[in-house]
Length: 292
Image 1 (spheres, rainbow, N blue to C red):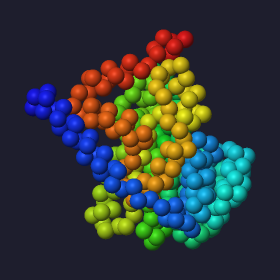
Image 2 (cartoon, rainbow, N blue to C red; image 1 turned 90 degrees about the vertical axis):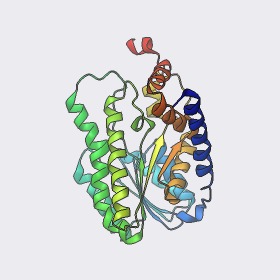
Image 3 (cartoon, one colour; image 1 turned 135 degrees about the vertical axis):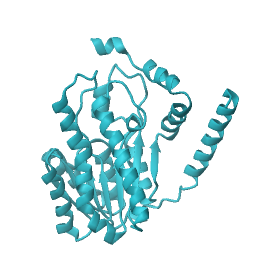
């Protein structure tokens, strides 16, 4: 296939993708009213903003993270915003027993579950891979194995309710970026596992949807601190990102991309010109700042 044909196919693909994405804009906040939702990693950042959006929509919310004091503040704010109910449970997702206990807490509170939003993430060094296998194991436990553990625990309730699983992943789980080997490995794993599980649900006639959220750089405090001075790219707002995640889950979409063009177009470039994409990515890194 010649270069001109490749460019034409790429252009047509973009148009079709945009039309498909735009055609699903029928979300209504009432969809979440009274729904029973777990949100992990909800003490700050995207998870916190999702909790606030769900509260305004009248959902029952159970949030979790490591820091109890922060969770208490988020719960109080959720109740002020109109949540049907709001509770928390604090602990580390490095402990699979804790991951299971979050689901048990939801069952004790509500007896069922409509939506499981898996959003938590392990702090990881934004630096060259240094061969630290112990750190790799920790990141895998938190970013991947706890997601699987919570899914297994929640599936009986989700199958009964015809519920949804929302997996907050990353553009770094579709395209490999430098300085993110630990993080990126776990996000690729999420894509592989949950995309496979989605197909199995279809084959088994299970009415549980899985939405994979492919996010670009978002202006959370953690992300901004990690990439400060090193990555020369603008960040998208966490409030809008959180709302798009909820919309995608409520509409039972297969995948959502945020921001759409800045994450979707590079994927098309990756398929046709991977070396070019590598070059473009590396041009956004201030390597000298990293050395400092």
